[in-house]
Length: 172
Image 1 (cartoon, rainbow, N blue to C red):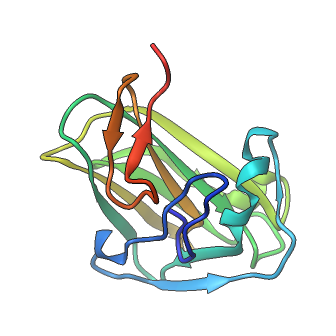
Image 2: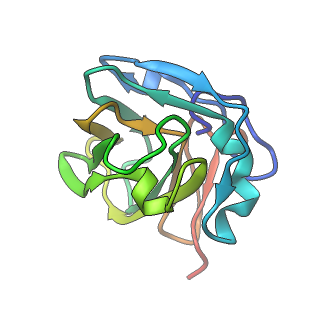
């Protein structure tokens, strides 16, 4: 899902579905800053970093419906486009109630402002047909630019919210 933005055909990300947000929907924002990526893999996804969603004083939680079979790899995409120093925005990423990354400082991890990073978490099992992803506040407000849900198995799995309605897993 391209958080806060439209569907992107090149990297095949659907538009954000705000119905997946539980509780505080936060605010969406856009930037005209030139965001760069820290890896070659993320270079084709540069359009994802033009928009974001953040919260004020609360956690940001998505409950994404998926087929209740297999395990998934979840990748979150982030860029610090507001603060110009480390330690100004720190948050954790929680999947189905389990902290997967604690105290993420996007500025520090990306080594600067307007630089994109991604975080991938594998072996995530759905709970009753959903994967719940929470961005929990540490310092300032959690921020996310995109979320990708990939099926683990080689078969194609339908996932609502993707532009083509599918989620492609790696070959076996």
